[in-house]
Every structure is written in C-alpha cells, then in structure tokens.
Image (cartoon, rainbow, N blue to C red; front, side, top):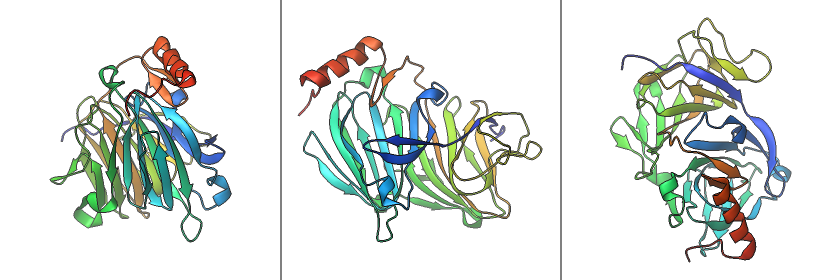
Length: 303
C-alpha cells in the first residue's frame, strides 16, 4: 500500500418518507448519480418509534437492481410474488436480485423495546443481467465471518475479504465489498481498495477521521462540525465519506471516541441509467416498458 485515498465529497443523510409512511434517513440516492456507480441508494431505517416504521413497505415491484438489507435490531418480515417468505433477524443480510422483475413487501417490526435498526443498499445490475432470473441470498448472522484485528478492531465481512476471511456473498457482477467495521478509540486502520473502484463509508456510531490528508473536499450539509481541514475529515453518525478513485487503500483513525461504520466498494458499470421509483434500467424505453408490463400484468417473467 502506497497511496491513501482522499475524500471526494462528504454527505449528511437526509430525512425522507417511503413506503406507506416509513420515516428514514437517505444517505444518498437519485440526486447523487453517477457519483456512487455501481451503487444507487443507501437508506438508514434506525428508529425507536414504532409509528415511524410499522406501516412498512407494502407490495411494490423491482426490476434491474439488487437490494441488500442488513439488520441490527428488530426484524423485517418479507414475502413476494414467487411465494418466498421469511424474517430477517438482527445480524442477518438479505441480498435480493430483482433481475427481470419481482413484486414483494417488507414489513419492519421493533424488538422488545420498540427499536428497529437496519440499512438497505441498492446496487445496479449491468445491462447484460437486467433481465436475469430473480433470486435471493439469505445470509444469517452466523454465516458472516468476523475478523479480529490489531488493537481490538472488529470487521464483519458480508462480501469481500479481510485478513484471509471471505464474506459469504460472491459471484456478483460489480465485485462488491460490504464490511461492518468497529475501530476502538486511539486506533488506526488501513484497508486496501481495488484500483478504480468506487469506495465510500457510512458512519453509524461514534466519530473517526476518514482521511489523514488535508486535500480540500466538497460537502452537502450546513455547518462545519463534521470536518477539520488541517487534520483530515472527522465524521460522525449519519454521514457518508465518498473517496476519490485514485489510491490503493483507505486510512481511518480514531481519537477519544471509537467509530463504527459500513464500508462499501464496487466496480463501476459506466452504463446509462434510466431510473424511476423501484425500477432501474438503461434506457427510457426499457423503463416505460417495465411500467406498462406492471400495469397490464405481464411484469413477472419467471415463476
């Protein structure tokens, strides 16, 4: 490792309402295209108020993407047009490839304290796989390996590889890396990133410096509480650090506070994106066809 990546831009997640009235935070989405290519959207649905999430996400379609749900607290009950049904529990991941089309519903429920906490990432599918057969990868907590590194650093590996341990998700076109990382106070972590891959971190607890290089970067929030230009980006909960593509590793350090964050990287598709609601295709004609098929009952291509 020779050159650490510097930060391109910092975002603060913003409140949005989705589904039947679920209040959540959007880390990034449509308005940030194509900065996060091949990733499309990241939603944070942590809440201690059942009124904010119990209405859930009733039946809705998807085509052309993968949705990845990672749960920390509570549960998410799901069912779909292919007769699949199940429950996502704390520590579990559901990696759904919508492909040619699926109709499903997702209903979150709180734990004994009424808490729910989870994240949903949307990843794009390349044009060659937009109409592939829908499928699931149901990954339980015990299937996700943990790497215990120096000074108490803990990494849960959903996809990718850390310290010789590989996550349970592989064979995905964008070659994604998805890590849940906890770094104790007063500790530094260097992690390799593939050349040219999009890479970003989403902070979910504590504070950490996500770059030790004082190169200027832009930001999408008011105020300057999230960074110190002289010593690198000091980021806290509900912020995103999007890295520049130059460099072969990321360098993250902590001071008085530990930090926990989700780290993602993936191979950009560099393809046109036609996106409306839950459907993402490559052209406006493909998008129009998808909605016409949904309305006339020919949306589902596989049983």
